Each structure stands twice: as C-alpha cells, then as structure tokens.
Length: 536
Picture 1: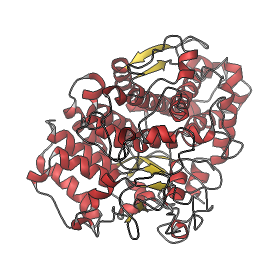
Picture 2: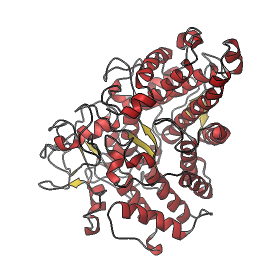
Picture 3: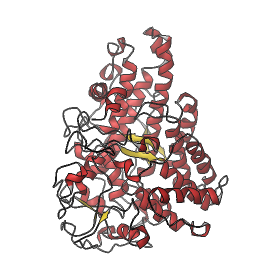
Picture 4: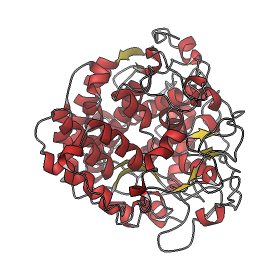
C-alpha cells in the first residue's frame, strides 16, 4: 500500500469528491456543468477543507473513471476501459506507433489504433476527447467557486485563502495540461474558461490559439505554484508548468510553424536546476514504490495508481498485466498473477532492433525477452510470436509487491527528468541557443551510465537520428512515441515504416492528415462550432 498517497494526498477524499464532482457531466460530452448547484453547491463549501477536496477531484480525473469499481465510468457514453486518461493517452501515443502490439483486437478500438485505421467513431479517441474535456470542466468550476466574491460571501479565513491561491494555480495548470493534449492530438479543442457562462456554447480554439493560451497561462501562474519538488506527491508544481512549456516549445514547428528550440533549452535548464536527480536504478521509475524509492527525485509528475483505493484499468495496470508472456508465464516476478493477461502485449520488430547491438546486452533499459520467440509478428492474434518486455512491475525496490495482484501500485511517470535531458540535447542539435554540446552529450551519457551501459557517445555521435533512437530506448511505453515521430517527419509518409503501420504486415505509408486524430463524431454532433479535421 502506498502510504504517501493515502496519508498525504488523501485518496479517500479524492474518491469521494470525484463522485460529487462527476455529477457535472452531461451526456453530450461537451462536459459543461449545468449550474453551480449541480456540481458543488454552497452546502459543500461550508467547511474550509472543501477547497482542497474539490481540487483533489480534478486530479482524480487523471486516475479514475468512476467510483463504483474499476469498471465504472462517470461519463455517460464512455466505457471505463476506453476513457481512463493515462490508458487512452498511452494507446494514442504508443500503440499507434512502432513500439507496442495489443493481442486482443476484439477490444473496442484497439485494432484500428494499432493498425492506423481509425475513424471518428473510434471509442478510444472519443474517450480521450471526453476525458480531457472533463478536466477542463472540473477546473473551470473550481475557479468559479474560488473567486474573491465567493470567498468573501463564505467568510473564508485568511489562512485558507492563502492556500487557495496555490490551489487555483494548480487547477489552471491542469486545465492547460488538458489543452496541451488537445492541441497535440486533435489540433483544436472546445474552449471554455471560468469566465464563460455556465452552459455557454463553447468556442473552438485552433493550434495557434491553444499554443498562445497555454504559454500565457503557465507563465501567469508560475509565481503561485510551489517550487520544484515542494508540493505533495501527485500534485503539480513549477517544474510541471516548465515541463509543459518545454514540450510545446520543442514541438512548436509542428504546432505553429515556428522554431522555439532556444526556449526549450531555457525551460529544460529551469527544470534541471530544480533539484531533480536521476533514479539510481532505471527500473525504479517503473516499480510499485516509485513514489518513495530513488525515482521520487526523477519523476516530475505522475498519474497516481494505488492497488487498493484507486483500482482502475489505467496504463500501469494494463502494461504490467499485459507484459506477462503467453509462453513465459512471468507474472509472479512482476507482482501480478502468474499468467497475467496471457500475452496481451508484445513489441514490434523495429523497437526490438534498437537493442539488437551487443552494446545493449547489459543495458538495464533492455528488458526484452526473446528466448523461444520469433521477432516477427506476422499474425497479431498469435501471442507466441514477437518479443515481450518487463519494463514495468508491481514489485518494490526493497522486496515484496503491491497490495493487489491485478490493480497495481505503480504510478505512471507522465513526466520525468530523463526526458528533460533528451529534450535539451535535441533542442541544441536543432539549433537552439543557450546550450553547449558538452552539456548535451553529458546528459545523454549520464542516462547511459545510469543504465549500466559503458558505451559513452562522442560529440560527433550526437545527431538527431541518434537522439530519436535513444528516446525510444529510454522512454518507450511512456506515451511519447507518436509525438516524437511526427516531430521527426517519420509518422506519416513512407520514409519509415514499421510492422502493421497502415495495416500492412511490413508497414505502408500513411497520409499526412493522420498526424492528427479525427474529432469524435459524438463530439461533433453536440458541438456546433467544431469542424472535422481534414481527411476524415
């Protein structure tokens, strides 16, 4: 059991408030609250502890889908299995690319995502759109309920008001994070803030407007956020804001057609200067105690998972159970049932080949199991073909396992320091100012040293192609790959094909419009100002 989550972030409260906050969700997936009383009324705010509890409800939307068990959903029309935030993010960023294969293609939406055959009716795409807009709605409501006028009317104490300044900044950050993912995945979004009337027909923001809003908003709240590593576990601080800014700057050419690599370096430097350090062991980042082991100083922002109090089919539960091989029955070592989910997940050939060089045989990032297996997956339903990996586990660094053998205790590392090192190096190679080649190379070599890889690189070896491969080796199955391939112009077109890309066993070219996902049909039907993305 993760005591730090229970005692410091108050999981009981989080689940309870999530149940209350969830009543705001309407069936149209615009996720606009009907009125203030429907969501959190005056009775709720009679106690001053309610403000922190309401904030917990916003965070809860990243981890939970409902409060009546792992299979429950608080959004009408969305299934729990296709709307958990971390899971659908993983599917859209990783399953759609060259690292992962899901064996059970009768699971709703998965076949179309991993074969790049998606349409506007795909339930996983709908789940991402809907779940992300729920966070926006929750954040907007929290901000409406914490205005000076509201606090005055409730005679809220000065001490609580001081805390609410920080809470409001966190709510705005979570809203900006949501708009970041909408910008990245869909290229547009319904756009509402706390200043819009309840039940207003939302405007639509394109990438340019979203980019400007995210940048402006995150800079505006920086002073009100706690310093790096100074907030409670699972809550955001300045470094999370800096991370989102670094991400949008690194991808600015994709989003707005402008280079912002110098800004990427600036914000990477801010994060690196925030006191973070690499975990002593690479795999500590992906274990059941990654909130307290050496990874706690590397993970910048996690999606919390707790096998007892936040049971859900989120990304770490899916990956750990899914990693168990059909031949190997290796679940016991991973802290789940011996058979796990019977070979649900495997890796594509192109990813496995990144570790084929003998220099990676002792690299701790290389958890590939290849014995008695063929590297090729010619039939996705054949769970005995293709290599498997053991990156994530429900085991603890000190021995023992998580509290449950299905629902894991392993937090999902949404952002971590290793990614910052890689972004710094890439931004430098792409021409950003403010970095040095020696520092960039040093950051990459520190990752290799931590991974027990003695093959340090030279300045000449620090190329864009090398960095893309190193990002895959370091960050695989962490929901970055689609974004990386798009930035490198390798996701669409035919310059780089991977197994089952475009539904070809050896991969075929994808049309350019697939750099964006379609707007879900259900969302178009209820949002008159949304327009379908080109090509769908």
